[in-house]
Image 1 (cartoon, one colour):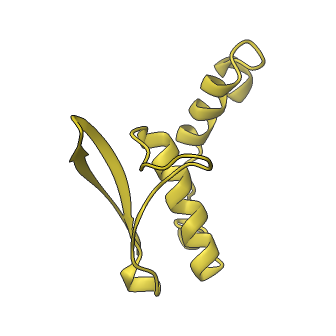
Image 2 (cartoon, one colour):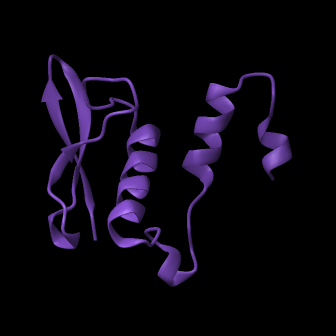
Length: 90
């Protein structure tokens, strides 16, 4: 199972993924257009899931039937202020 880990670079905590156990390597979790690893945990979790899906064809947690969407919902709300509220996600 891929792991999320952090490194302190330039006074910021940045997120990286360890995909060695599924055929990948250790990668900086960089949003599109960025040259550095993200410092946002929600973005890092989304990027970790996307890369895991790319490497294995499966979403982490899908085998157990439990996939936490709270972080993704919060990220969507943050990126789209005024368009959606938490009330509509309940």
